[in-house]
Amino acid sequence: MGVLYPGSFDPITNGHVDVIRRLARAFPKVHVAVLSNPDKSSWFSVKERMEMIRKSLRGLKNVRVTAYEGLLVDYAKRIGVRLVARGLRAVSDFDSEFKMALANKDMAPAIDTLFMLTDKKYAFLSSSLVKEIALYGGPLKSFVPPPAERALRSKVKERAAGKSAG
Image (tube, rainbow, N blue to C red; front, side):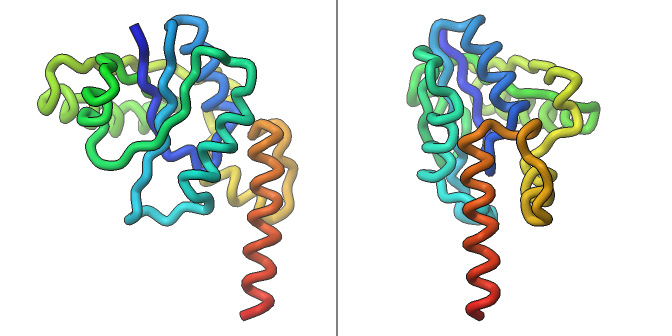
């Protein structure tokens, strides 16, 4: 049985990688699905995020990286997955994820949600925090995998060049 691990991954963090590695040990197939949401402001395009994830997970043979838009349950049905994994860092995550899981269960009763606690060393970590650290030139090594660090540094340079040109 496979599991679906969705997210925006803008960018992927070491917390995400930790959850994906653990899922890859527990399930024969892990579908990492990048949310394509045109209404959400992202630093990286879907294509860039997918490439960053693939490079970060190199060597995990049972992990497949794809993109989706629309309802998660519709995508899960389309790829034939009945289990969605969600990482939890704190109680605040549980509140929002629990509500989303209940809505998904109502729309698709055959699809279940698995909540996976993050490793405590990543409990504070978020993509938003990582982007803020990157903006100010802070150290990223302990927060993101090397492909994400390179992509963040490059994106910060692009953004700075765009502002100075404007």
